Every structure is written in C-alpha cells, then in structure tokens.
Length: 294
Image 1: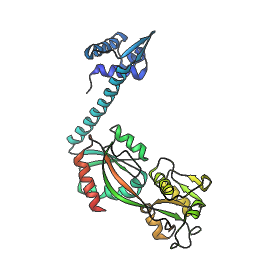
Image 2: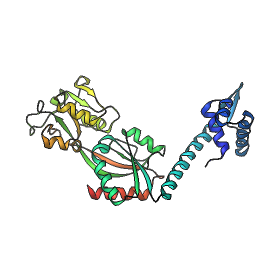
Image 3: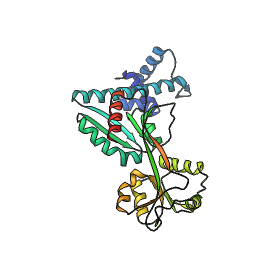
C-alpha cells in the first residue's frame, strides 16, 4: 500500500487543483498542502511550480507521479496474486492478437486448464500494438502476438510458424491448383484487416518483397473481425488473405477456396512476448505444454 500522502498528490494531479482534490479525499485544503510539503521536504525537491495562483507539475513532479503510478500497479498485482493464493489459486492474464485469440489459443487454454485447474486465466484480444501496451502497463502477464514488435525491448520465444493464404468463394476461385500471379492479385477485389493488425502488416510486406502493386481501389473494405471477413468472402463479396488456421473449417466444407501464390508461400512467425516482471514459471509451463499439444 502506498503512503497516503502519495495518494494525496496523485489526487491533486488527477483533479487539477487543491480544492477539487480535497473534496475528493474528504480533507481540508491545508491538509492537502501539508501532505505535498511533507513529500517535497522528504525528497528534497519541489514537485510543483507556482504560476500565479496555480500549481503546475514540474519535471521532478512528473517523474515522481510516473513512479507512483507504476508502484500502484505493482501493489494492485500483489493484492490480486495474494488473494488468489489465499484461495489456493493463481490468476494470470494473457493478451492475444485476433488470429491467435480466436483460432489458436482456445484449444491450448482448454488443454492447459485440464492440467492446471487451480489456475484462473483471463484473456484480452486486441491488435498487436494494443496487446503490447497492456504488457507495458502490467495489465497482462503474457502477450501472444502475430504482428511485429521490438525484439530488443522484450523477452520472447518463437511459438509457431503460421501460413497465410489467398482465399475466395467459388465465384472467384474455380481452379485451386492454378497459382495466382502478381497482376491478378493486383486486380483482385480485396477485403482486408485494418491497418495495425499483424495480418495486414505481413500481407503488405509480402507485396513489397515480391513487387506486387495493389492499388487502393482494389481494397473493397477494411474489417476488424476475421469472422466477418470470412462471411463476406463466402458470400462472394470479395477475396482476402488470412491465416490458413482461421479458415480450416471452411476449406474442408468447400465454402471457401484457396489458390497458391505464384511468388511462393507467405509465412509469418508467432511469438510469446513478455518482460522481466512476467511470471516466468507460468510462461515456461504454458509455452512447453502448448508446443507439445501443437
């Protein structure tokens, strides 16, 4: 638990004034001022500059507040972990990108829970940038990502290699053995994931690497849901590129068809991403059991 005077200065920053902070905390304004003065005297540096009648947070104050907010996250996590330990359980939070979260992670979680019924797992599904932001803030313990990330910044383990394929309905694909070339790809009516998604990043990288010029007019729409893209493709609205794992069922049923790329297959690597504060024991166990299951 943080010093109550730290909570006071956080309230002043949040509310923007001594008066509003005192009302929120149920303290008098002089008491709020005393708390701030105590901390400034203790650390030997002022946290606010006095500009007229206003208190403006200075560089030292911003540094202090940032550290205090990080400390809050540590104590919140400690409280949560101790609570679950008291109940004989442990809680872990996993963040996953869309393809992994919808089509790869569910069976892995089911298998893992069979071996570890005492553990409570929570899942957040976002795009790569959002998942990594949650990891940075300490709100998740582990990130499973399909998009690019700064490998020098995070600890990481290669999870699996994922193939992305060109898909369409019978309307667009009547010969699955015929490879699709650059010119045909450039003139396809495409339904793609939004910018910032791992799927979109690797498709555009593949196009750059193989000099495939896809004009903006060829992109019919951008959709944030893989299930919605599949439904649109099945309805014959357009074609798309996505993980083969995401359309296995539709390929078996024949409602979606695929053609190979003339320029060669499109693969991407999926990773476990974490940091020094992540629970190493859980991550090692979950990684090992996931690899063995796959």
